[in-house]
Image (spheres, rainbow, N blue to C red):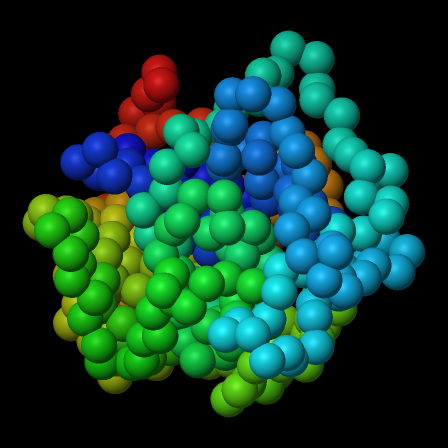
Amino acid sequence: MKIRWLGTNGFEFRHQQKSFLLDPYVTRRMDLICDPTKVARYICDTGAGFVPSTVGMEHGARSIGNKVFAHQQTSSPCPLPYAIGKNKQKHEDEMLPGTTRQASTQRVDSIIIGHSHWDHLADTPEIARRTGARVIGSATTINICRAMGVPENQLQMCVCGETIKSLEVTVEILPSLHKQPMLYPGSYNCIPEKIESIADFVEGGTFALLFDFGGFRVLNLGSANFIPEALDGLNCDCLLVGISGRADNFLSDLMRCIDTKLIIPTHFDYFDTPMEQAGERISIASFIREMRDVAPEVAITIPKPLEWFDLAGEKLCM
């Protein structure tokens, strides 16, 4: 079981020659919903250069400045794909000296979304369009994907209490909470008329996700909050946990509820810096000290953007 961190709460899992994405967000810009060049670079390496997404432009897609606009509802089975902002190339990030572009294979089998904020969901429609991946998420997630042109046969809505099963992985959908205070609350019970800024990516409810990769159990809390009754007594091999904006007692209360061998912090980086300069918006040193106080027996791995490792923390050469 191999994983790599994609920044924020994004991860790619490789298991039995399959690729699963969790909350993939690599655009990392506040003024543009999705930058397909970054999706191509970090997720969907085509191996033949990049051609910007222009599908639907001839059917009335529009862009104003550097914003991305979804289409109004039409009589077609699903709304047309979004357009790309005119100034998309203006802020293209520079690679740091000595770094290389690290992209996965073009194949992505499934994408699962923990909640619908832009830094969890905004790149998913482009990834799904390029790879044909199935998108699994809440009603809000699915309706945003419909508004952004993801075909209906690639969408799978899930609800709390449901278990998603396949031959390679099982995912239990557990109820959870977003940290408070929260930007952009709300939900979409039908297809939104437009998605024109990150503010249109409303939360839509938050899941805790329990993955079972052939007996290796990985729990993800993508935001620093939880429902104790939903997790009480839960055992997992690895906990991927968002630590941004956590309450003072968040980690101590969480460790009383669950039993894990390994913890990997997420959502400690900046939202709007290049992937290679993800940075440390939330102190990792403070997180480590707190974990040593509340659960000294739990191993800690600090992920680096795009670096493959196994879930014992060993770096892998891929």
